[in-house]
Length: 237
Image (cartoon, rainbow, N blue to C red):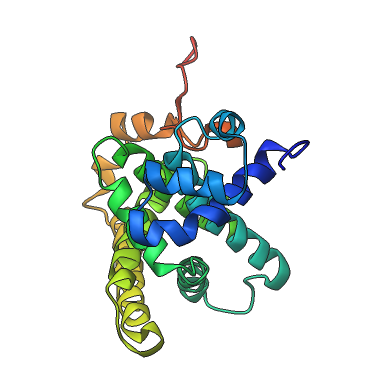
C-alpha cells in the first residue's frame, strides 16, 4: 500500500496513525505496531523509515509543530507589535499549534526518561532557535547562546504549565507566559545597565572580553544544535 512513497511522507502517515494510540499506550512499541497495522505498511519498510520506532515519531511530532509555526509566520508575519509581544506571540502560537494535548503530555513523559532527555533538550533548543530566527535575530556572539537558553527555559516552563492548565481558553497559561517574558526583559535591562556601569567596566574588558569575543554562533544550519565553535587565535594576535 505504501509502494513508491517517500520516507518523509511515510513518516507523516505513521505519525498521523500513531496519535490515536498514544493516548492509551504512550509513545511505545505497541503504539508503533498499531500505526504500522493501521496504515497497512510493510513492517520492514516502517523500520527502515523509523529505526527507533515510536521514538522517531515523537521527535517528528515535535518538529511538526516547528514546521507549522514557520508556515504560520510565512503566512501572517510578526510585524506590528512591540518586540516583547512578538516573542510572547510566537511562543504562544507554537504551543497552540501542538493541538493534541494528550500526545504532548505523553511526549513530555517520554523525553523525561534519561535515555531521551538529551534529545528532548535539543528539540527545545531548536524551537527556541527557530523563534529567534523568525524574529530576525542576527546575533553571532555569546548573545546567540544566552538568547536561546533563556527562551528555551521560557518555552519549556510555559509548555509544562499548559499541560496542567484547566482555565478557560488557557488564560492562566498565557498570564504565566506574560510574567516569564517580563522576567526576561528585566534581565536584558539589567545586562544593559551592567554594560554601562563604570564599576563593571574592568570585568568586561581585558582577558574576559577577549575570551568571550572568540565565542560565535554555529556557521551552518546543520550545526545549529551544536555548542558552536571556537575561533582559533591568529598568530599575530
